[in-house]
Amino acid sequence: MKRLIRNICCMLLMLSLLPLLSGCDNEDDVVGIFTGKTWKLSRLTNKGSNAQFYPNLWNNNEEEMKKSLDKLYNQKSTFTLNFEGTELDGELMGTTVNGQGINSSVNGTWKADGASGSLSISVKVTGSAESDALAKAFISGLQNVYKYEGDANSLTLYFKDGPTTRVMGFTPQR
Image (cartoon, rainbow, N blue to C red; front, side):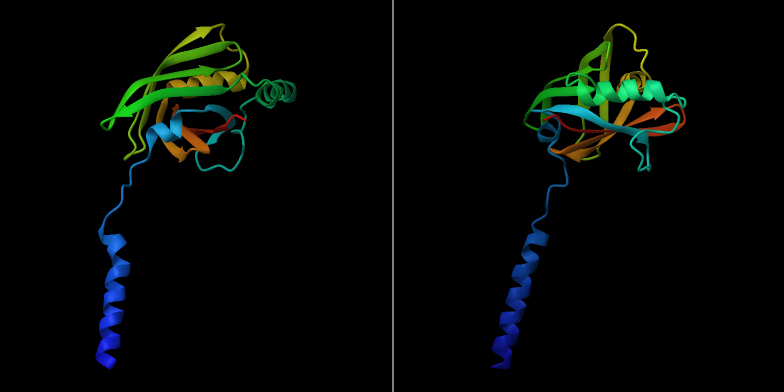
C-alpha cells in the first residue's frame, strides 16, 4: 500500500513538472503590443523616477507647464503614436510609425526585437518647429529610442538625452 501511494505521488510530481520541461516562449508579441491602437503619452521622466515628468522640463515656468499639460490632457490628437505592421514567418513587415506633437508630426519606420526588447525608430519630422518644452522632449525622445517594455495596455520607451536615460510612458487612447 505504501509503495502504491509513493508511486502515485511520484507520478503526480512528474506530471506537475511537465509544463516546466515543455519550455516557454520568452519573446514579446511585438505586433500585439505596438499595433492596433493609438498610444497617448502619459509620462516623460528619468529612468528609475516615479515622477510623471522629469525635473526642470519647463525650467520652473509654471505658465508653460500649464499650457503643455492642457494640450496633453485636453487635445486628443497631441502627443500620440500609431504603429502599423504585421508579422509573417517571424519577420515584421510594413512597419510604419506616425506621431503627433503639438505643431509637428513624425513619420517613419520602426523595428522591434521581442526577445531583447530593443526598438529602433527612424522618423522624419514635418510641420512647424515645436516651441513647447514637452513637445520638444517628446519629438526628441522619439528620435533617440533604443528600448521598449510593455504589453497591450502600457508601453514604455527608453531614450538617451545626452548622458541621461529618460522614459516615455504611454497608454492606449480611449
